[in-house]
Length: 149
Image (cartoon, one colour):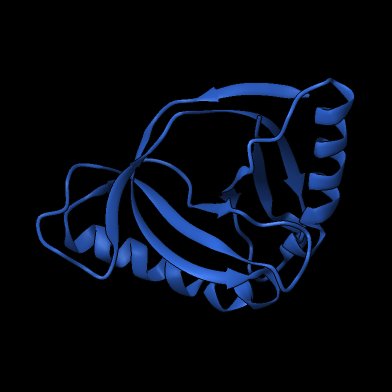
């Protein structure tokens, strides 16, 4: 179990209320738009794309807040389709997930088990950083799971 303190991160982001059964519609499409708007706004991407889950659980029908964020350097020059904010710093347990996202739950289950086994409490705040995305061969995906404690 690796515990990290993540600093505040300025991001351009998209937010919506959704459920796990419906999130596939945002894969790839929002990322393309975020990168395009960042370029138009002359914002330099400074880190991997992040999905932030607020109030999600493992149930496919539970509605929660999803934020898809692109870390950036600089401030937006004009209003756009996306919002700007600084993600707050947070303490988390991290784990690398190698492979298809449909198996992310296995990494979550393992890490959450480790958290409880070590006497820690979950904060209800999770992030996924997409270090490498391979849409042609998902077995090559590399995702860092960050579970708040």
